[in-house]
Amino acid sequence: MRLIEDLLGRHPDGLRYLVADHDVTLGELRRAVTQEAALFASAGVGEGSTVALQVPPSFTQVEVLLALWRLGAQVMLIDHRLKPAEVDALRTLCRPQYVVRAGAAGWSRLNFRARHELVTERRAEGRPATSDHRLVQFSSGSTGLPKVIGRTEESLAEEIARFTQIDGMPRFGDRLLLLSSTAHSFGLLAGLLHSLAVGVTVVFAPRTSATDILAAAQEHQVNVLFGVPFHYELLGSVPVPPPLPSLDVAVSGGEMMPPEVAERFFAAYGVRVGESYGTTETGVIAMDASGGMRPSVGHAAPGVRLRIVHGEIEVALGRSPYLTVDGQDRYADGWFRTRDRATLDAAGAVRLRGRGDSLVVVGGLKIDLMEVEAVLARHPSIVDVVLLHGEVIEAYVSTADPDLEPEDVITWCRNKLADFKLPKAVWILPRLPRTSNGKLVRARTALRAAAMAEAVS
Amino acid sequence: MPTAQDADVREFILTTLTTEMNLPVDRESLTDDSPVGAGGIDLESLSLVELTLRLERQFQIRIPDTDIEAIGAMTVGQLVADIVRRRTEK
Image 1 (cartoon, rainbow over the protein chains, first blue to last red):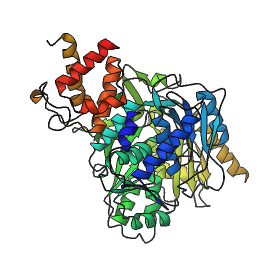
Image 2: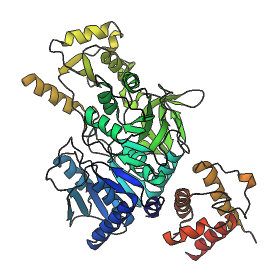
Image 3: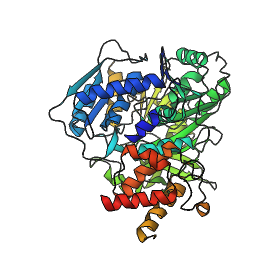
């Protein structure tokens, strides 16, 4: 892929690109990619081969991904945290010719390891690529089969170029602490690939703990931080936050940032948390790295055309991002429906108003479940909350308070919401289930199962 | 002599640069003699990669990776002629 040759060739050998317990310079990266590419080529990987890559975020993952792309392979990026049954479902759906995964020895969920042993398996039933998509990702799969999302080389190049035009993105010589997963769009494109393009050093924290993240930030004098709201919550909850004098930009991507989390982080470290809003299908849609535009998430990113239809945001795309029939209904006539509800202010800044599918109708009355969620989230002893609408509105809440009863929750809402908006069933759990990517699970069966398991225990 | 094909390709290149790629290019001041790279449109390599991928898709042509550097050294007029040639040769 010419994009890869360009990305690898833009800066001098000595530039520190990846930093954890050891460094990888650009020169070392080039050599590693050349070696890996030779190995994969001798195993038969070439233009249009399909390869499932299931390696934890690591230097190994970066090198292998770039090597496979150099050979022109179509890479299916699989989150290493998925369970075997989930991975099997993806393989059945996409039939990769090769599966590259990390040897199981010695890695844990919490610790970052720069290097992994690789196991490469050739699968007889695999099929070569039938499209020019070079990156294949899967939607987080809240219901049913995952959607299979493809990105072409052109779409990747376009998004990287787009990030270079966004104010507040790191520049040559900057040090970025990357907490976002590199198996997902924001971490991969804004984190790894954009950094390679402009010459940014990418630092990984040794562990997902506030202490380790802060120590890495201090040791490497990082000036930019990318994470998901969970990371900012973690860092904001430190009793005595250490000074981070070099930090001047922090951006949250992947999930709507609760304003109170951003405020707590600002109070602790003096840096406003900006927001990057996008989807796996389109990449970045709008971004405000400064955090000064909240509750807006910023203006449309350079070159992104968007419109609001029936209160939902749609983005212009050259063709459908989906490789299978699932999801095709979300693309029509050059426009992709995000299903995110949004409004544009007079200056064109995007303000997200919740999910399109969180809008429910009860007895002919429209209710935005996000509104009810927001009320519950303000309850002093409720930590997380997910609202669902089946027959009735159901609330799943987590708390550390053993005395909290469903009646208390309803009473709390009763003061703040019209009766028709009240949850009719309340489930109280010590914690709510999350996806492998850390997002709250919104699938009813999973939430019910967790509630039932809790009731039994 | 400029042909309709030339005009097509030129229009696509200029529209892509200014609209799709959102580059700060002043269409009015560009002539066929403007360099694609330094001193003209100032396309740096990442944008050049993006432009060539878009040209490939639009005109159903194949530009080998080894030709990219040469394209970066062309003028707008030369690039237009080069793409027209690739279209007719394919």
